[in-house]
Image (cartoon, rainbow, N blue to C red; front, side, top):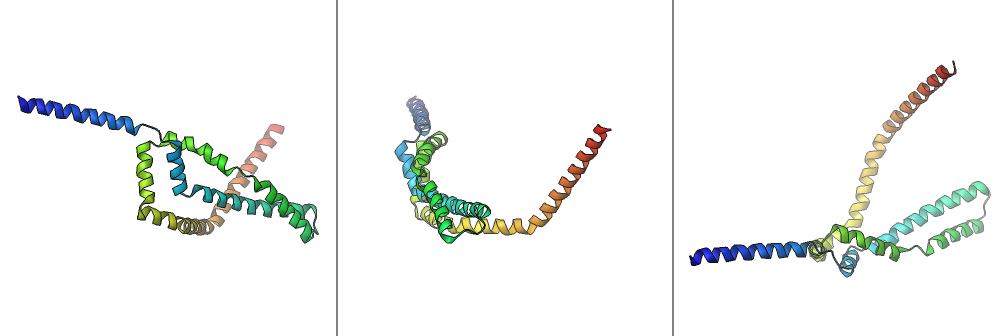
Length: 179
């Protein structure tokens, strides 16, 4: 009888501990916990890098637009165009963007999830991943670009053929409607 009582107590305690663990697992992470994760993931410097890339592309586009409007643009004029672009991007709201993504992480992860994820990224393997990620990303983008460049001529030919057929079909429909 005592063995049966002991077994019942063990089963009850196990189920209570399991439900207590489930309750903890559904708690959303704190803002501080998400910020810690974002810091470990180096999100802010990554966002700065993305903004700098956008700014460089925008400078090039602004220069082309200005040269189209002013074909013989002087270097000092182009410097003013670059200055305008710099000024436009000066107050890019990176901190505000980070604040905006915190609730997203809170919706998709629990405290327990982030504890495990943070633990991984603090580990030597996680740190290695973070160190190697920029090079892996660049290499991956280059590999993807190489694959696309090989296929691009065929894709463009196929697209142009389909567009020409579509245009031809539309012209036939137009002629039929007019008659």
